[in-house]
Image 1 (tube, rainbow, N blue to C red):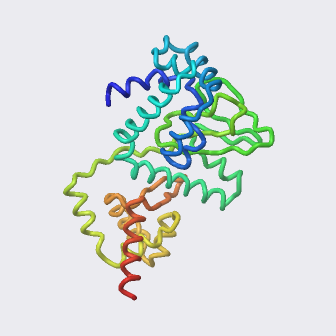
Image 2: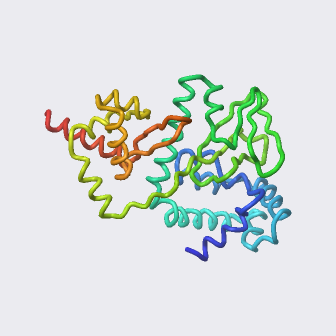
Image 3: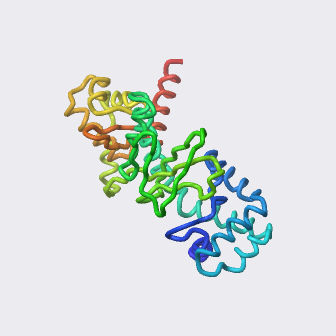
Length: 278
């Protein structure tokens, strides 16, 4: 895999331009749809975008130059390398990635409900600043993106770091990919995780899990579970250590959301209740 990963390095430099066709809109539907769309990239687009890449980086490898010249086998090779890289480097950690993404979406959705588009845009991470009617962003290069009546798709990304990114081609659907908040890693030993899961048994934590819904603050969680604020905070910590919820700071408050594991556990409990009732 290391050798194949090196094949991708010229396509995605650590800084500067990388081709737009590598991030097709179908990626929102999953990896299978994204790779299918990548394989269908028109030859003229490959030539244009890879040609721009060759002018900003070191000479491209022969297989990438062949792809720029319309070689379909080279494009298929790229799709295969991306699939294997995903399976080795991303898929094993997808639950954690998805948990952070869902936490960010919950925070943005809450801001939208509380104060509309203005509150939503003002809630974005600090490398972006909403100064109506302009959304300013720290960006690797000086550029402007004019919507011209089009909407802007905001995409939180686990792998985007420091600054947002957008398509180089201004004619594509306006998309702003921005970094999600990354908490300091807190490594929990396996034995400690097992003890945390063992402590989950009980009505209060069941009420906490069910009370989180699509996201709530600690104060709201305390009211929904009918416990004190201190108790809600303590139970949330145990659930977070067990990998069942994610906490995202929002100003002076925090927002708790279920991780995929927490949601699956809750669904399983509800299914069991349904079977018992039957």
